[in-house]
Image (cartoon, rainbow, N blue to C red; front, side, top):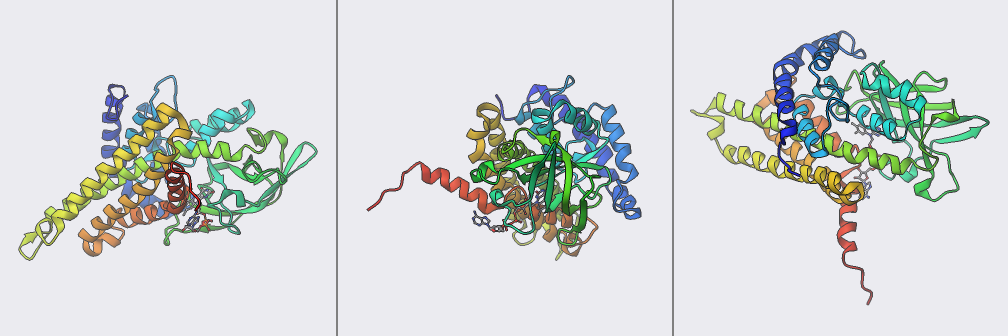
Amino acid sequence: MQLGISDNIKSVVMQLRTFINEVIIPNEVRYLSELQDDRWQSPPVMQTMINQAKKAGLFNLFIESDKHQFTGVEYAHLAELMGRSEIAAEVFNCAAPDTGNMEVLAKFGTDEQRSRYLVPLLQGDIKSGFAMTEPAVASSDASNIMSEARREGDDWVLSGEKSWVSGAGDPRCKFLIVMCQTEAGASPELRQSLLLIPMQSKGVEITRMISVFGYDDAPQGHAQIRFTQVRVPSTSLIGNTGQAFEIAQGRMGSGRIHQCMRSIGAAERALELMVKRSTSRYAFGKPLSELGGNVDVIANSRIEIEMSRLMALKAAWMLDQRGLHAALGEIAQMKVVVPNMALNVIDRAIQMHGGTGVSEDTPLAKMWAAHRAMRLSDGPDEVHREMISRQEIGKFPLTYV
Ligand SMILES: Cc1cc2nc3c(=O)[nH]c(=O)nc-3n(C[C@H](O)[C@H](O)[C@H](O)COP(=O)(O)OP(=O)(O)OC[C@H]3O[C@@H](n4cnc5c(N)ncnc54)[C@H](O)[C@@H]3O)c2cc1C
């Protein structure tokens, strides 16, 4: 299987690129300006673009359907294109956390969960969230999760507090997949289960919205949510009790690749903005591109993007060919390298823009904030490094003297 653009995706790549360049990027300013009218409603231009994407057959590309079937490597190329604009993934119904949640429901959901939640998600009629992180514990170690669901007759009763629930600020968000303890006596990796909690359930309360370097990331946002004695039927369990880690690991494997490929798309856009600025603005009698070390700045950005793309495509290839367990090392390496690379490229593009770089006049400042946060979300760099080093050290058993 090839790592490049296969015949199977050639036409969709062209279609997607044209749609992003001709429909989405020109509408970014309008999207932001409509958002000012009501920050917690999806701007009307988003629905207009969604309708156009559906009509063009560019909806739900992340999941197999009767219209398309892509390998992980093929979809990775499409995700990269979507990364060029912060709002593109939503237009194509390919944004996190919905994509991961749809994959979970498709694989582990009951018939009822699929018809009530997966079908409207696939149609783009509702949104969802994934609630694992908790304010009270170091959540990079998911075995710390304390929220608890108890069985009472035919119901589960959930109590606890979650933070950083992305997407929960959007009124279209109708349910959360919540990680919680149900098996207190079991070994740490088997204590947690996943429950499907409708947002309108009694006892679900958004206590605050959390910003990222001051950005509210509206209309989706990131919520802190208190669950007080939230009662849901026993059929709200996803998969089996104690299966949360296994399901979440699978969800995050492909999700991390999609997210990193989108970051590569963002880095490409930052490099493009950097170069255009450097060849169109003059100082000291020369274009910025010819001043100081700016040729190296541009060249290093290209080199780093290419190296990162190869790493991410290799991770996607491993996942396609050999499955999640075999691909874990490559996925962890990519998850450390790509956000850091994107941050470097975006930072250089900001520098090339002078004061404009940190203003709202380009997408760069918000891109930087989003990629800085990516070094934490889906696991901090250090957790992935620890996994990588454990694999390396494991190749040479410890010797005792
Ligand atoms: C923008 C954004 C969106 C997010 N969206 C979601 C979401 O939708 N759902 C959700 O559940 N969570 C979400 N998160 C939360 C994210 O997954 C957590 O922040 C992350 O897992 C880290 O957990 P923590 O914040 O509790 O940090 P802690 O676990 O307290 O870790 C703090 C720091 O300790 C260090 N550390 C931790 N472990 C190790 C180690 N093994 N070795 C060395 N150092 C270590 C690292 O420097 C780490 O950054 C989001 C976060 C952000 C910023």
